[in-house]
Length: 258
Image (cartoon, rainbow, N blue to C red; front, side):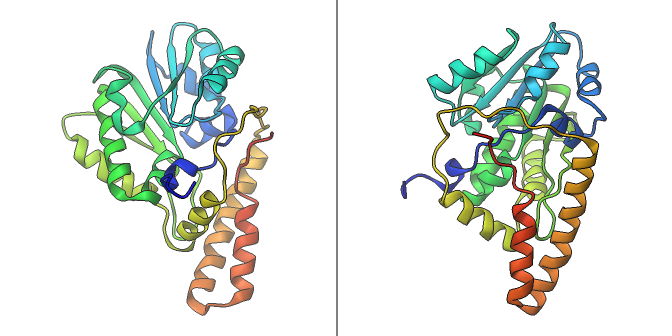
């Protein structure tokens, strides 16, 4: 396993549709679905076991939602397709060459959550190439939603939205998205160690975890606490604060329910 780039060892998580809709800035999955144009083409890059596409596609039979992930294999795709509406497609592919999967300027929305932070663990050039490809496949005036925005010692929950227009080129978008989502400080070290100890995508598919406004509020509070404790730990070097910080962050890591 040592020869496999660290970004390919990222945990494949089971994020609920509601959690991702919140992250994208919407109050509900219905609100996310309603803002898509008629017949929209949507690309979720690094989708993993996400349920967002399934739930949106159930509400909008006119759209086509494509989930792309490097770690998909034929068995996983077969199981994912079996649980999904007919207008959801699962494709194995590399985020650095999205134009091998969909044509340039073909997507009404490009969505990606937790991919860029993991890509940047390997080297910035990987994340930047993926960002440029997201921009390339998006239609003019379409939305590109990428997250989560990373904070000092921990990741936040909110994604950021860009509009592809004449004032934004591919390089500018890639740089802004990379800088906003790059893990920093102790969390970068923790996540790298976490990824190194993970195996490849499991054979079984996780069930959908329940997300509620109350759980989202709790996660935000824990994230704020992690930042405060991380600041103190970084300043003092205290073992007690580092231990507390790691315990708090463990509560915020979303693992598959295998």
